[in-house]
Length: 178
Image 1 (cartoon, rainbow, N blue to C red):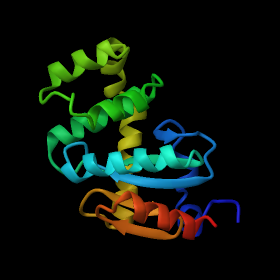
Image 2 (tube, one colour; image 1 turned 180 degrees about the vertical axis):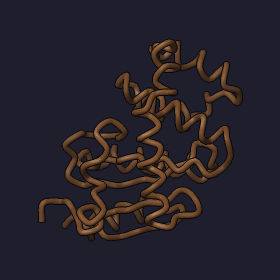
Image 3 (spheres, one colour; image 1 turned 30 degrees about the horizontal axis):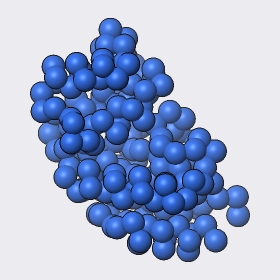
Image 4 (cartoon, helix red, strand yellow; image 1 turned 120 degrees about the vertical axis):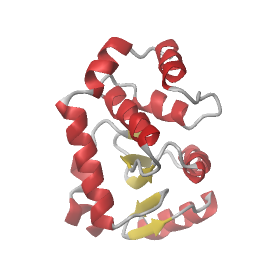
């Protein structure tokens, strides 16, 4: 087995995301995380996944946006997807899950500017067809897997709705990628 499991292969997940990931681009243990930036459990789960990546550098986390908690969630998702076009996805994704994140768009954009994001390009990209296509693709996966809450995760052939802790993630990774 080359690390691409049946769930990934049957749904094309492995080929779609080139810019929206955390970890090593050539990581052999791929976790697909479905997220909403306004989800408290997602924020907590983000830290669990960061800890897993610190323990196992062969882990790659592909982020699939699932903005289900309102318009602000969709706005934050759009920022993350647009920032990926500047190569700033990891910076923005981590910021959007940090305690530093502000609660209004103007302050969020100011913080992203301080983190090196070109706001003129970001605002243009937020309205681009490429970002609209990303949103559509991400939504199609959320719909296909029938996820209704976040976070949700796919590890190998395991589809996991809801939060799981670091030890459970590691246990599933060992089972799926041994």
